[in-house]
Length: 262
Length: 296
Image 1 (cartoon, each protein chain N blue to C red):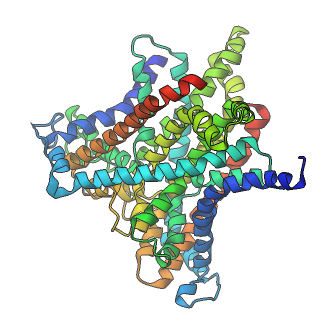
Image 2: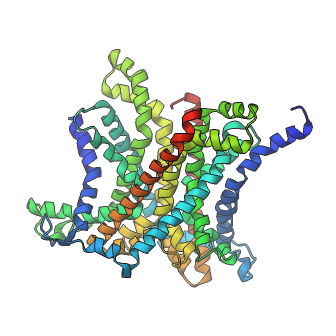
Image 3: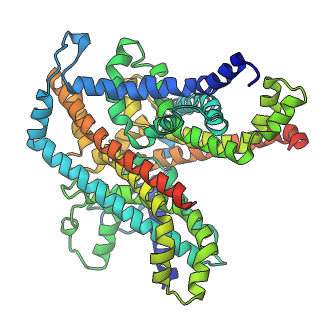
């Protein structure tokens, strides 16, 4: 009985994916048939066809989110270290401030800052979009790296410094390999958050910066189920691919260097 | 602490390390909220308007569109979040207590929706629950309905069922995700002891697991509620033309050419942010409890 309930709930989560997968290769599925009449790859062809620009938008979007991820990770490392290893005045306030973008909607923030961004020349271009995308990723970057720092402590780093390593060497050969697993998890989270943003991209980018999430939106809105499904599946696959490649390449680069130290 | 100078440097160091993150948090996030607040009070220095007034608040708070939107957002967010929490905890409980050897991989299916954006969640709910959707076809096949118009309109409907379903599909797995490891640890530590001493399943859950799990559940509730209260995509894609969800209404005002409407939009934004801040306060409180009782 309990098992049945569990599988029913898991199926409820899974079934929508399967139905979307079927819709994505359907050319005709009229009411009230339970299965499609005809199949076609129209949606997928549309996505890779050069005239639709879908593929260019996808690649540009991936690049944008990678840049956002790198910036967010870079600024999150020192912040997480400060919280993990230092006691200072206002620490609990800092923690709450960093947590805030998880709970206070970015919609309100983006509308509030829009006028200022326009004045500073940051609206309707990539720089502005990158800057606003960094904000919602910060809580995840700092929180995940913080838990890694708290887990590892800073004894190994202190040892390296005592033995005469410079701070740069310590970072390159000790800290970075130690936190790499956390960096991959945090990076994946930040990447997904950035890649999925619709509203703030659309507001700050002013329609000039078109990400894949924005490209997909009107297809969902129009109710063209075949097109929207195919483009959504490409969306999900592209995320899976980027996350997979980053995991593998990080593993490859750090296998050698971490072998001696950890 | 040999020298005053190094001591000072050491004291300053964490602030320097926090600086880059704070530039974004204060420079964009907090500034955005503060400027939103100022604009909601009618303060637009760029346009030569320096006078601060509460007129826009009075306007908006008496507006019937706003009031019905407010009720609608509160209702859909609350119901979706409550269902997500109850069913999400139930699912993590079921996963832990019914271990099956054969299909271990299937259990990980629950993590899927966490990675899927809200736009796609809206599409999935649309495909399944629209009047020509799969569910309606199954009902037709079973002879429950005679025509697609007999199927209740769940999407684009004032009742907001489609919106609730989309948030539920996203939110339930999130709650399972944040509770499952804690539940697993608790199970090994206390639940088996309680069960050995003769407690029933329900007693174990009510008196052993729930109190320890409460701070995590509470913080999960706050995150989901605040998010769905202030997110644009799902109510825009699945909502009715009236009543509109608050974020959708805010953007419609914002995109209007008339300046007064921009201030009205900011009033709605402040209302969304106000509820989020209440949720944040409760979240921090829940976290204090977590530290005190050591749930995780």
